[in-house]
Length: 482
Image 1: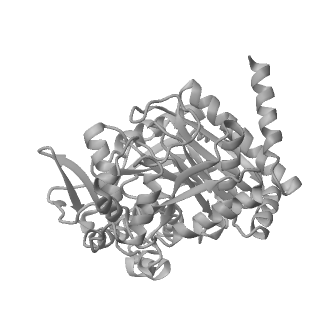
Image 2: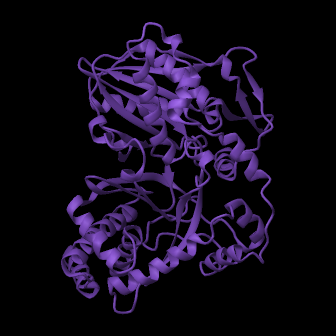
Image 3: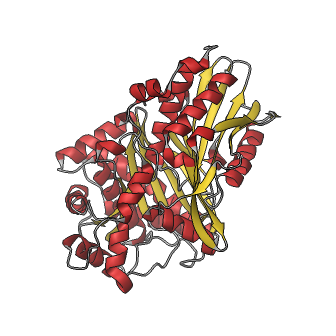
């Protein structure tokens, strides 16, 4: 799956049709299920500050031939009835946030009149506008589907507000919707396929609403919990708040600027395999090696030897959540420590040890951590400096993603910190970056990414990273530009 942002998503023009849920009288009721911690954080930010609204994400895939509209409409009904996160949403009523549920028996889809487009830019801007309008966390339902039809093939796009799904969910959504649709294609008696048969084929989807309920009644912990103490130490070393990207971005904390984006290939498959081999031989992993390389790149630019960050972890260890759509992630703290000599392998040992320590914190939610810390933590920025990693080769149903032209697409909103998403496929490593679109941030992030790529090459060629040489090169480049 290719990870990108909407401003970089380019696809062929065609006839665009939207597919939306029709909600009749009496089909929507208030729900007693509280939002999860992630949902609450996202919703309150959107409600009180207007920041973080329309943080939607979408999955897209291509199929050859002509779109079977009847089959797709029925497939969408099955799909939404299968996942309770798509039967729920949030609205503000009398200045209070409420969850609403849709009666699954009343789910039906309505197709819009087609919109003709003549350029890739027109398609992109149309989708961006419509997804941003519909996939708002304070509307219900906060998702929409779209098709783009052409003479020889068509694209199916599923877009959701972040309250409803995470990145892992997009892989599940793409695979399931395609599988249900292809089973129904060309079937003139669509009612002969039952939801029980679909469930038998795809497996039990689990219930994200049940996940939210269980999270809300998790036992309260306190500062004596060693996992909470580790979080307290992590935040304490950072002034009682979350870490920030340690290169100047030209924005004040808590004052987001329009978001900039960068999407690039980080390393081809051969370079990725070689880099991973060095990381494993050094007692690390590809992910901790990449984090170490990032730390070395920052060290080359700024001279700092310490780079704290947070990274997301999925919470799907229990088999009941394996096929669930929802926001099933937590966060973990990690610190990259660059050794005085700037040696990659020695620095990697420190990074990997920090990573292993972070994994021992599983089982305590961010809600529990924040409640236990109390005033020992304060939020200084809207965003958190984080690095995400996902190996799509290890996820089920991704073998033909290249053939499907599969994409994970994110919206472009506002930002006051930098965030990075690293993805691995059979083509190698790719990196999507999100940061404030200021001249300072554009320069800083571009320099950081170019230096990071050089670090990877140097490690693969020499097994070590000549940080002093990198620093000299950067100094020379700065001298030539003045």
